[in-house]
Image (tube, rainbow over all chains, first blue to last red):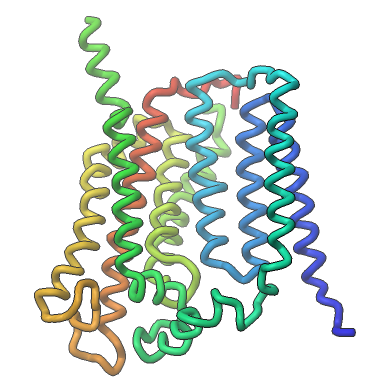
Length: 190
Length: 147
Protein backbone atom coordinates (compact mmCIF):
# COMPACT_ATOMS: atom_id res chain seq x y z
CA UNK A 1 0.00 0.00 0.00
CA UNK A 2 1.24 3.45 -0.87
CA UNK A 3 2.17 5.77 1.94
CA UNK A 4 -0.82 7.50 3.46
CA UNK A 5 -1.11 11.09 2.27
CA UNK A 6 -1.73 13.10 5.40
CA UNK A 7 -2.70 16.23 3.48
CA UNK A 8 -5.90 14.35 2.60
CA UNK A 9 -7.02 14.94 6.16
CA UNK A 10 -6.62 18.69 5.65
CA UNK A 11 -8.85 18.47 2.56
CA UNK A 12 -11.51 16.56 4.50
CA UNK A 13 -11.34 19.03 7.38
CA UNK A 14 -11.74 21.98 5.01
CA UNK A 15 -14.62 20.27 3.17
CA UNK A 16 -16.30 19.56 6.50
CA UNK A 17 -15.96 23.19 7.54
CA UNK A 18 -17.30 24.35 4.14
CA UNK A 19 -20.32 22.09 4.61
CA UNK A 20 -20.92 23.32 8.15
CA UNK A 21 -20.65 26.98 7.10
CA UNK A 22 -22.92 26.36 4.10
CA UNK A 23 -25.63 24.80 6.28
CA UNK A 24 -25.25 27.60 8.82
CA UNK A 25 -25.74 30.24 6.08
CA UNK A 26 -28.92 28.53 4.90
CA UNK A 27 -30.33 28.31 8.41
CA UNK A 28 -29.47 31.81 9.56
CA UNK A 29 -32.03 34.57 9.33
CA UNK A 30 -29.79 37.38 10.56
CA UNK A 31 -28.43 38.81 7.30
CA UNK A 32 -25.36 40.37 8.94
CA UNK A 33 -24.24 36.98 10.26
CA UNK A 34 -25.03 35.37 6.90
CA UNK A 35 -22.86 37.90 5.04
CA UNK A 36 -20.00 37.36 7.47
CA UNK A 37 -20.28 33.58 7.13
CA UNK A 38 -20.17 33.95 3.34
CA UNK A 39 -16.84 35.70 3.81
CA UNK A 40 -15.72 32.77 5.97
CA UNK A 41 -16.90 30.38 3.27
CA UNK A 42 -14.78 32.21 0.68
CA UNK A 43 -11.73 32.16 2.92
CA UNK A 44 -12.14 28.42 3.53
CA UNK A 45 -12.48 27.87 -0.24
CA UNK A 46 -9.28 29.86 -0.73
CA UNK A 47 -7.47 27.66 1.80
CA UNK A 48 -8.78 24.60 0.00
CA UNK A 49 -7.57 25.94 -3.39
CA UNK A 50 -4.12 26.34 -1.82
CA UNK A 51 -4.06 22.66 -0.84
CA UNK A 52 -4.98 21.88 -4.48
CA UNK A 53 -1.95 23.97 -5.63
CA UNK A 54 -4.17 26.53 -7.34
CA UNK A 55 -2.53 29.48 -5.59
CA UNK A 56 -3.50 32.10 -8.18
CA UNK A 57 -7.16 31.15 -7.88
CA UNK A 58 -6.87 31.06 -4.09
CA UNK A 59 -5.39 34.54 -4.11
CA UNK A 60 -8.28 35.88 -6.17
CA UNK A 61 -10.88 34.07 -4.08
CA UNK A 62 -9.44 35.45 -0.84
CA UNK A 63 -9.21 39.01 -2.17
CA UNK A 64 -12.52 39.17 -4.05
CA UNK A 65 -14.72 36.62 -2.27
CA UNK A 66 -13.67 37.20 1.32
CA UNK A 67 -12.68 40.85 0.95
CA UNK A 68 -14.51 43.03 -1.56
CA UNK A 69 -17.75 41.10 -2.00
CA UNK A 70 -18.28 40.85 1.77
CA UNK A 71 -18.01 44.65 2.01
CA UNK A 72 -20.32 45.12 -0.98
CA UNK A 73 -22.86 42.71 0.51
CA UNK A 74 -22.69 44.66 3.78
CA UNK A 75 -23.23 47.89 1.86
CA UNK A 76 -26.21 46.36 0.10
CA UNK A 77 -27.56 44.99 3.39
CA UNK A 78 -27.47 48.46 4.97
CA UNK A 79 -30.00 49.52 2.30
CA UNK A 80 -32.46 46.74 3.20
CA UNK A 81 -33.61 44.91 6.31
CA UNK A 82 -31.32 43.21 8.85
CA UNK A 83 -33.40 40.04 9.06
CA UNK A 84 -34.60 37.70 6.33
CA UNK A 85 -38.33 37.02 6.03
CA UNK A 86 -39.63 33.62 7.06
CA UNK A 87 -39.98 31.27 4.08
CA UNK A 88 -42.92 28.87 3.83
CA UNK A 89 -42.04 25.22 4.51
CA UNK A 90 -43.27 24.13 1.06
CA UNK A 91 -40.56 26.13 -0.64
CA UNK A 92 -37.91 24.43 1.50
CA UNK A 93 -38.93 21.07 0.04
CA UNK A 94 -38.75 22.34 -3.54
CA UNK A 95 -35.26 23.75 -2.89
CA UNK A 96 -34.16 20.53 -1.21
CA UNK A 97 -35.31 18.48 -4.22
CA UNK A 98 -33.33 20.72 -6.60
CA UNK A 99 -30.21 20.53 -4.42
CA UNK A 100 -30.44 16.75 -4.01
CA UNK A 101 -30.97 16.21 -7.75
CA UNK A 102 -27.97 18.42 -8.61
CA UNK A 103 -25.85 16.74 -5.97
CA UNK A 104 -26.79 13.27 -7.23
CA UNK A 105 -25.89 14.30 -10.80
CA UNK A 106 -22.51 15.62 -9.61
CA UNK A 107 -21.77 12.45 -7.67
CA UNK A 108 -22.73 10.43 -10.76
CA UNK A 109 -20.22 12.48 -12.77
CA UNK A 110 -17.36 11.83 -10.33
CA UNK A 111 -16.73 8.44 -11.93
CA UNK A 112 -15.83 10.14 -15.23
CA UNK A 113 -13.55 12.76 -13.67
CA UNK A 114 -9.80 12.30 -14.11
CA UNK A 115 -7.85 11.66 -10.92
CA UNK A 116 -6.37 14.73 -9.19
CA UNK A 117 -3.07 15.62 -10.84
CA UNK A 118 -3.50 13.02 -13.61
CA UNK A 119 -0.95 14.01 -16.31
CA UNK A 120 -3.14 12.44 -19.03
CA UNK A 121 -6.29 14.38 -18.12
CA UNK A 122 -7.55 16.69 -20.89
CA UNK A 123 -6.66 19.81 -18.88
CA UNK A 124 -3.02 18.73 -18.49
CA UNK A 125 -2.37 16.87 -21.72
CA UNK A 126 -2.85 18.96 -24.88
CA UNK A 127 -2.34 22.74 -24.79
CA UNK A 128 -1.64 22.68 -21.04
CA UNK A 129 1.48 20.59 -21.60
CA UNK A 130 2.38 22.77 -24.57
CA UNK A 131 2.24 25.93 -22.46
CA UNK A 132 4.40 24.40 -19.73
CA UNK A 133 7.00 23.19 -22.26
CA UNK A 134 7.24 26.37 -24.31
CA UNK A 135 6.82 29.11 -21.66
CA UNK A 136 10.51 29.15 -20.61
CA UNK A 137 11.60 29.66 -24.25
CA UNK A 138 8.82 31.84 -25.61
CA UNK A 139 7.85 34.06 -22.68
CA UNK A 140 10.66 33.46 -20.16
CA UNK A 141 8.62 34.15 -17.03
CA UNK A 142 8.68 31.63 -14.16
CA UNK A 143 4.95 31.85 -13.42
CA UNK A 144 3.23 29.89 -16.20
CA UNK A 145 -0.17 31.12 -15.06
CA UNK A 146 0.87 34.72 -15.79
CA UNK A 147 2.36 33.68 -19.14
CA UNK A 148 -0.87 31.96 -20.22
CA UNK A 149 -3.11 34.68 -18.85
CA UNK A 150 -1.25 37.74 -20.09
CA UNK A 151 0.54 36.56 -23.21
CA UNK A 152 -0.83 33.36 -24.76
CA UNK A 153 -4.39 34.30 -23.88
CA UNK A 154 -3.92 38.06 -23.96
CA UNK A 155 -7.08 38.42 -26.04
CA UNK A 156 -9.18 36.63 -23.41
CA UNK A 157 -7.78 38.77 -20.61
CA UNK A 158 -8.48 41.90 -22.65
CA UNK A 159 -12.07 40.66 -22.97
CA UNK A 160 -12.24 40.11 -19.21
CA UNK A 161 -10.93 43.61 -18.54
CA UNK A 162 -13.59 45.03 -20.85
CA UNK A 163 -16.23 42.95 -19.03
CA UNK A 164 -15.12 44.42 -15.67
CA UNK A 165 -15.15 47.91 -17.20
CA UNK A 166 -18.65 47.30 -18.57
CA UNK A 167 -19.85 46.04 -15.20
CA UNK A 168 -18.49 49.14 -13.48
CA UNK A 169 -20.03 51.34 -16.17
CA UNK A 170 -23.40 49.67 -15.65
CA UNK A 171 -23.29 50.24 -11.89
CA UNK A 172 -22.20 53.85 -12.38
CA UNK A 173 -25.00 54.50 -14.86
CA UNK A 174 -27.63 52.87 -12.65
CA UNK A 175 -26.57 54.14 -9.21
CA UNK A 176 -24.22 57.01 -10.00
CA UNK A 177 -21.14 57.31 -7.85
CA UNK A 178 -23.15 58.29 -4.79
CA UNK A 179 -22.38 61.72 -3.40
CA UNK A 180 -23.05 63.95 -6.34
CA UNK A 181 -26.48 62.54 -7.17
CA UNK A 182 -27.65 62.89 -3.58
CA UNK A 183 -26.27 66.40 -3.25
CA UNK A 184 -28.17 67.45 -6.35
CA UNK A 185 -31.37 66.10 -4.83
CA UNK A 186 -30.72 68.03 -1.61
CA UNK A 187 -30.25 71.18 -3.71
CA UNK A 188 -33.66 70.62 -5.28
CA UNK A 189 -35.29 70.46 -1.86
CA UNK A 190 -33.87 73.78 -0.70
CA UNK B 1 -12.22 60.91 21.87
CA UNK B 2 -13.01 58.69 18.92
CA UNK B 3 -14.78 55.46 19.89
CA UNK B 4 -12.75 53.43 17.37
CA UNK B 5 -9.30 54.58 18.39
CA UNK B 6 -7.67 51.16 18.02
CA UNK B 7 -9.31 50.54 14.64
CA UNK B 8 -8.24 53.96 13.40
CA UNK B 9 -4.63 53.66 14.44
CA UNK B 10 -4.24 50.07 13.25
CA UNK B 11 -5.81 50.93 9.88
CA UNK B 12 -3.60 53.97 9.49
CA UNK B 13 -0.60 51.70 10.00
CA UNK B 14 -1.95 48.96 7.76
CA UNK B 15 -3.28 50.91 4.76
CA UNK B 16 0.15 51.92 3.37
CA UNK B 17 1.38 48.34 3.82
CA UNK B 18 -1.68 46.99 1.99
CA UNK B 19 -1.07 49.36 -0.93
CA UNK B 20 2.62 48.47 -1.11
CA UNK B 21 1.73 44.78 -0.98
CA UNK B 22 -0.72 45.37 -3.85
CA UNK B 23 2.03 46.87 -6.00
CA UNK B 24 4.35 44.02 -5.01
CA UNK B 25 1.72 41.53 -6.19
CA UNK B 26 1.51 43.42 -9.48
CA UNK B 27 5.19 43.87 -10.23
CA UNK B 28 6.05 40.38 -8.98
CA UNK B 29 3.26 38.73 -10.96
CA UNK B 30 5.76 37.18 -13.38
CA UNK B 31 7.46 35.30 -10.57
CA UNK B 32 4.82 34.50 -7.97
CA UNK B 33 1.05 34.09 -7.73
CA UNK B 34 -0.93 37.19 -8.46
CA UNK B 35 -1.01 39.85 -11.10
CA UNK B 36 -2.88 42.97 -12.09
CA UNK B 37 -6.31 41.68 -11.12
CA UNK B 38 -5.36 40.64 -7.60
CA UNK B 39 -3.26 43.78 -7.14
CA UNK B 40 -6.20 45.96 -8.18
CA UNK B 41 -8.49 44.25 -5.72
CA UNK B 42 -5.95 44.55 -2.89
CA UNK B 43 -5.36 48.27 -3.48
CA UNK B 44 -9.12 48.83 -3.77
CA UNK B 45 -9.59 47.05 -0.46
CA UNK B 46 -7.15 49.52 1.12
CA UNK B 47 -9.35 52.40 -0.08
CA UNK B 48 -12.47 50.59 1.13
CA UNK B 49 -10.90 50.01 4.54
CA UNK B 50 -10.10 53.73 4.68
CA UNK B 51 -13.70 54.53 3.78
CA UNK B 52 -15.08 52.13 6.40
CA UNK B 53 -12.97 53.61 9.19
CA UNK B 54 -12.85 57.31 8.30
CA UNK B 55 -16.11 57.65 6.35
CA UNK B 56 -16.96 57.59 2.66
CA UNK B 57 -16.64 61.37 2.30
CA UNK B 58 -13.03 61.26 3.51
CA UNK B 59 -12.31 58.47 1.04
CA UNK B 60 -13.91 60.50 -1.76
CA UNK B 61 -11.50 63.33 -0.93
CA UNK B 62 -8.53 60.94 -1.07
CA UNK B 63 -9.66 59.10 -4.22
CA UNK B 64 -12.09 61.40 -6.08
CA UNK B 65 -14.91 59.76 -8.07
CA UNK B 66 -13.67 61.50 -11.22
CA UNK B 67 -10.26 59.81 -10.95
CA UNK B 68 -12.04 56.48 -10.50
CA UNK B 69 -14.01 57.05 -13.71
CA UNK B 70 -10.87 57.99 -15.61
CA UNK B 71 -8.93 55.06 -14.13
CA UNK B 72 -11.49 52.51 -15.32
CA UNK B 73 -11.35 53.82 -18.89
CA UNK B 74 -7.56 54.31 -18.78
CA UNK B 75 -6.97 50.64 -17.95
CA UNK B 76 -8.95 49.36 -20.93
CA UNK B 77 -7.30 51.96 -23.23
CA UNK B 78 -3.82 51.01 -21.99
CA UNK B 79 -4.48 47.31 -22.59
CA UNK B 80 -5.93 47.90 -26.04
CA UNK B 81 -3.25 50.51 -26.80
CA UNK B 82 -0.43 48.04 -26.15
CA UNK B 83 -2.10 45.80 -28.74
CA UNK B 84 -2.17 48.62 -31.30
CA UNK B 85 1.47 49.52 -30.60
CA UNK B 86 2.50 45.95 -31.38
CA UNK B 87 0.46 46.11 -34.60
CA UNK B 88 2.16 49.36 -35.66
CA UNK B 89 5.55 47.79 -34.89
CA UNK B 90 4.72 45.13 -37.46
CA UNK B 91 3.63 42.18 -35.29
CA UNK B 92 0.28 40.63 -34.42
CA UNK B 93 -2.13 42.29 -32.01
CA UNK B 94 -0.81 41.83 -28.43
CA UNK B 95 2.36 40.05 -29.62
CA UNK B 96 4.72 41.68 -27.11
CA UNK B 97 7.89 40.48 -28.86
CA UNK B 98 7.59 43.62 -30.99
CA UNK B 99 8.06 45.90 -27.99
CA UNK B 100 11.78 45.29 -27.46
CA UNK B 101 14.53 44.04 -29.82
CA UNK B 102 16.15 41.81 -27.15
CA UNK B 103 14.50 38.53 -28.17
CA UNK B 104 17.04 36.38 -26.34
CA UNK B 105 15.83 37.52 -22.92
CA UNK B 106 12.24 38.09 -24.07
CA UNK B 107 12.36 41.62 -22.69
CA UNK B 108 9.44 42.58 -24.91
CA UNK B 109 7.26 39.94 -23.28
CA UNK B 110 8.17 41.24 -19.81
CA UNK B 111 7.36 44.85 -20.77
CA UNK B 112 4.14 43.82 -22.48
CA UNK B 113 2.90 41.69 -19.59
CA UNK B 114 3.73 44.43 -17.09
CA UNK B 115 1.90 47.07 -19.16
CA UNK B 116 -1.26 45.09 -19.82
CA UNK B 117 -1.36 43.99 -16.17
CA UNK B 118 -1.09 47.67 -15.27
CA UNK B 119 -4.16 48.24 -17.43
CA UNK B 120 -5.97 45.40 -15.65
CA UNK B 121 -4.90 46.85 -12.29
CA UNK B 122 -6.20 50.31 -13.16
CA UNK B 123 -9.57 49.04 -14.40
CA UNK B 124 -10.11 46.54 -11.58
CA UNK B 125 -9.10 49.01 -8.86
CA UNK B 126 -11.31 51.75 -10.29
CA UNK B 127 -14.33 49.54 -10.87
CA UNK B 128 -14.14 48.01 -7.38
CA UNK B 129 -13.89 51.44 -5.77
CA UNK B 130 -16.64 52.77 -8.06
CA UNK B 131 -19.03 49.97 -7.13
CA UNK B 132 -18.23 50.55 -3.46
CA UNK B 133 -18.85 54.30 -3.81
CA UNK B 134 -22.11 53.60 -5.63
CA UNK B 135 -23.40 51.39 -2.81
CA UNK B 136 -21.86 53.15 0.15
CA UNK B 137 -22.92 56.56 -1.12
CA UNK B 138 -26.56 55.53 -0.80
CA UNK B 139 -26.42 53.85 2.61
CA UNK B 140 -26.49 56.01 5.70
CA UNK B 141 -23.34 55.80 7.81
CA UNK B 142 -23.29 52.80 10.13
CA UNK B 143 -24.78 53.86 13.46
CA UNK B 144 -22.53 53.54 16.50
CA UNK B 145 -24.58 50.82 18.20
CA UNK B 146 -24.23 48.48 15.21
CA UNK B 147 -20.44 48.36 15.32
